[in-house]
Length: 275
Ligand code: NAP
Image 1 (cartoon, rainbow, N blue to C red):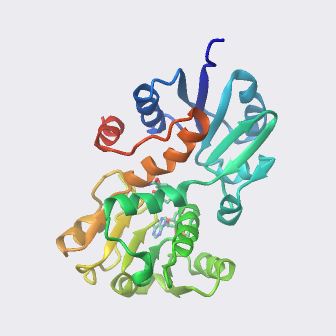
Image 2: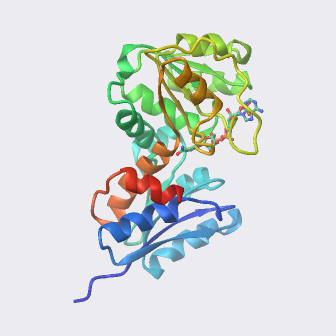
């Protein structure tokens, strides 16, 4: 019997700039998988129809990106506990006529830090989280799960941060956005989950003079690879991890679920995705 041709992809809108096809195609070639990974631009009103049709066209599953992460969770027949806690899905697996939802962003975030900062000990002190949007939810759940003693959360819109603290419990301490510099100084782990600093967006302007050696500092923004936060952290002697690592690591469990082999995040993959 011939081996099935395995398909997967990413649905979002817009999708033209997604790096996921390059990422998965690098692994598809590396592991000699007979298959492909494609980017699909899908309107919100069509998402349900598209997801019910793709399995009939040979798709094993898809990644889900902006603006479909919440809807994908709602449309799935089953969801992992972590996807339910995060309240969004970035990975769908099609099994017979069922859609299973998962969220691997938090796992990708933690594995990126473990690889990029091998001495990182999340339990050694508080973690500062700048921002309280969708990505922050995945980061907060992951940090709580790996045992950070406390999360110092700060967001421009205070009410959004307060709502996260209500939802995720008493290990979260809120700082007003104007006090973000104090939160940066107090954290052992420091994470920017806002879109500030991204090419085309305003700069992250919170005071960074509290950055110091001993901290592990990361940014979810990966364009540019070295943001102002990461540059100042590096200059202050902190350990820095760029946001590309999270993108690469969140893809590992997805590739494994759809295609079989567990792929590696290495220099060749980074080069392929950045090319
Ligand atoms: P989101 O849900 O729209 O949240 C955006 C966050 O940025 C909110 O906290 C928002 O604060 C804050 N923000 C936006 N403009 C601001 C401004 N002018 N001043 C202060 N704060 C501002 O977006 P998201 O999905 O969480 O994504 C956030 C970033 O993470 C994006 O750059 C995305 O590309 C990146 N990301 C990277 C990865 C990766 O794998 N590396 C994965 C996921 C996301 P308010 O609540 O006050 O609006």
